[in-house]
Length: 347
Image (cartoon, rainbow, N blue to C red; front, side):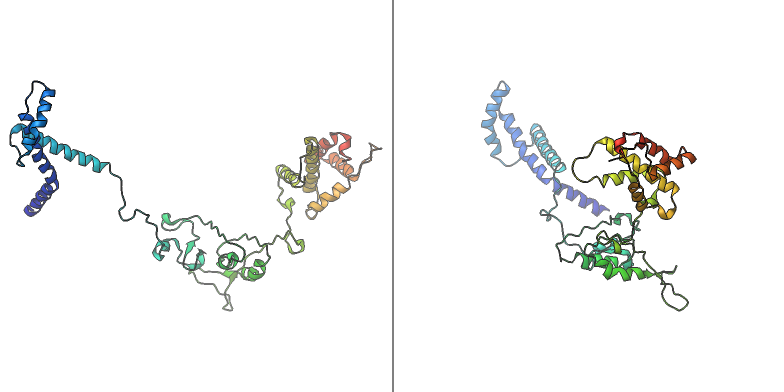
């Protein structure tokens, strides 16, 4: 304990030795001021410059009380200046002035990789990213979006897309402009992955073969509709609001390019479509709830300019519905449509 105290005192003396020496040297300034003569401060200052060389002629410090006080103030002032300078110093990273970036190692990526290989997004041969959105260490949770940039033939499909499809750990939406991915990976996805039991091992059937969980593959081919699955928006209509959404989307995607027409005609078209689609949804059999029926209705809407009392099959159909259900949604929309100018029907 005594030895440690002695070391602390020695360290303190060594650290403060420059300030002590400066204070002892500064006592000569006090001596020079005492030797200066003059009636006022300015006269004494002029005399001080002549007596200072005499006081500094000797390296020995002055032990006069006033000189020691001047030395103490100078030493303490220097110590205070050094302390304030160090407190406001910038935080330099010595040896790293040009940056600390480096190539990552396996230890750096390891916390982000799932121990089960199939549960990862493959990034490179040695780097992967777990699909688990809630890993044990929350700090390792990362966004699963990956951007792959490369020219034609650089291997985006061969070296990134296909290996990640083969992981078969998620649902996938794949754009296939060349039409090759479905041909090359469809059978694999159709078979699916082995079904795992509670022990994490593949389950077997009664014949000892692995049980697979196949993918449900859906294809939308806008080039060759014979090779495409079909989409029927009528199957997703559940309310009058859904009808209006479908009509708005239909008009927005069939108006063509160029300047939009008069709002009057758009409103009339909206009322007509709402009436026809409303009738199909609420009154037609399920197998007839499609765009083919809608086109048949439109084609049947014959108009005769010379006979304003003429009623086409669609008019008669709505008349019959109005007699049975006067407050029907489709009837109300059709009546609003018919209230418009007579030339709308001929458009």
